[in-house]
Amino acid sequence: MKYFVFRNYTVEPFFKGFEANFSNYEDVSFIDKTADAYIWFYFSPYKLDSDIAAKEIEHYCELLDMVYSNIGADKDFIVFTMNVLYKINYVTSNKVLENAVAKYNEKIYSMPAKVIDISDFYRNFSAEQLIDWKYYFLSQTPVNPKLSSQFGKWFLRQIEILEMKRKKCIALDLDNTLWHGILGEDDIKMGEDYPGAAYRFFQNYLLKLSRAGIILAVCSKNNEAEAFDVIQNHPDMILKKDTFSAYRINWNNKVDNIREIAEELNIGLDSMVFIDDNPAERELVKQALPEVCVPEFPAKPYLYPVFIKQLTDDYFSAYKLTQEDFDKNRHYKKNAERNVYKKQFTDMDSYLRGLEIKLTIEKLNEFNKARFAQMTQKTNQFNLTTKRYTEAQIRTFADNGGLVLGLRVKDKFGDGGIGGLAIITIDGQKAYMDTFLLSCRILGRGIECIFIKYVLTKLKKMGIAYVKAAYIKTQKNEQVEKFYDSVGFVAIETFADSVNYELELENKEFSLSDIYELEDLCESE
Amino acid sequence: MRERIKRIMKEAFELSDVPDDISQKNCGKWDSLRHLQLVVDLETEFDVSFEPEDIGSMESLVKIEEKLKLIGK
Image 1 (cartoon, each protein chain N blue to C red):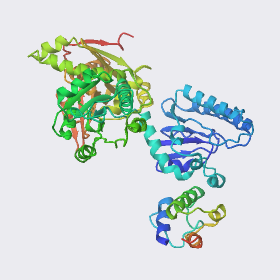
Image 2 (tube, each protein chain N blue to C red; image 1 turned 135 degrees about the vertical axis):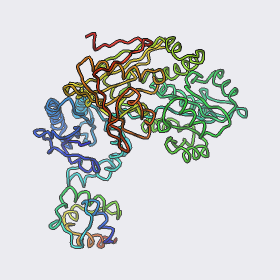
Image 3 (cartoon, helix red, strand yellow; image 1 turned 30 degrees about the vertical axis):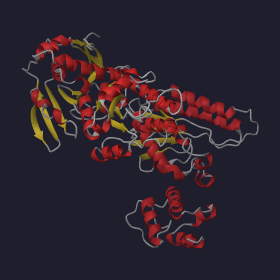
Image 4 (tube, one colour; image 1 turned 90 degrees about the vertical axis):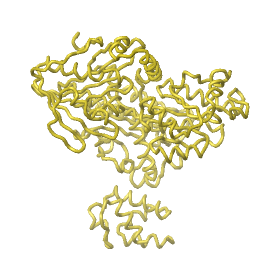
């Protein structure tokens, strides 16, 4: 990723290790068109006169508008907020500077840019640590250049957050983790008095996480019946049995239990965070499952507030949440219900018919663009090429005449949301399947098959003569290795990590099973 | 000490090898921004704080070595 940074002070040291070029100070006359993304990083000017500083900040707003209107909509634009780091209070009631900064920040949050809040970085340091005046006078660095490596790490995490990379599941121990005390030995406490209140605080946090789409699971060494007795019947328990999407409450080792939970939820081990107060259990999991994140546990219950803040920053923050995220926990549970339902049928067809599956094809629009980008970022298993895209990049495909098709899946149990995506570039009579993916929670009902067949039928209708495609191997997408072969594509080149395919559409008919009700919103326009 | 300074220079200037007579004059990569990086890294490595007057005159490996010795490193 090549950045071009607009700035009013020396910020080069902070982007060490990143591929970045920089504007001249306070200059917007040159915009590097070769950059992949732009960064706007302006500091409140270190001026002794607040009125002058405030005027300059107003001027920055104008510069920002000018730049923004000259940057292509296909490029990401990342804007840092501004803070007052230094001010002399001649008159303490004079808030001209603070007001100007507040207005500036309000403005950037109202822009369709991606905003990074710099105060989140400053928070970790004292005022003395933040500015080294020697370096300010020597080379116009607004913040101590010795903080540059910490800044780099923090900035990387912020970019991940903008790209919606977050963990999917938190697996929890019970005794002295979710509540105070050990089942069968102590009184279980999670009431309004300390230490119970601290655990209550933690449970409320977990409930909040769950509502933001993080899956909760229990991984604990207890007797299952006893544990559920507390979960269901303890008057102070905030999380209920149905808040948890999976649980392993037994005396087996936790490494196996975590593996099983990941399998049951159909998520990767690298999407899991494991919380346990017992250092021996943590160490075991860390050793055996290095992909699982195992944070240190707070030394005292009253440290939970600090712990959960760090936990969120490190693993669960998201820039924006889509409706699918909010609904996710429901989906995982619905899937479990579906699996139970599956057992009642012996033949697959009647099972599928009984589900009353309704598939809707929709093209890229304002409402689904965040979800489309998120799927390219997060889908690993059923993903033929695993290309990661931003919203802006996806829009570019559509702008250049390509097809960007989302697949929404509903059945009698509920709306599964958008769970499939195909991105196809078109060049005359040729088409190329750039991306074809399905979210794992909609897999297993023949949906992948009908989706690709429908896409091919659509391409044929559009007059496409042949379609190229590729399978690019990753550590996680082995299950789709033969997917294109299964729908009739011919492998024309085979490499160690990829296969290129071709399919002639002439004389090909794709039978679209009538098990599924299919609606194409692109056609109805 | 010379080796420690060289190691820091290597990284700050992105050089594969640092000659003993390296100076701002004969090293194309030693610009003002990399000089800033060099000073920041030297201060961290040797746990010292240079005065602005010194920073301006630290224009060669030899002079940097002299300066560090002078402040008792």
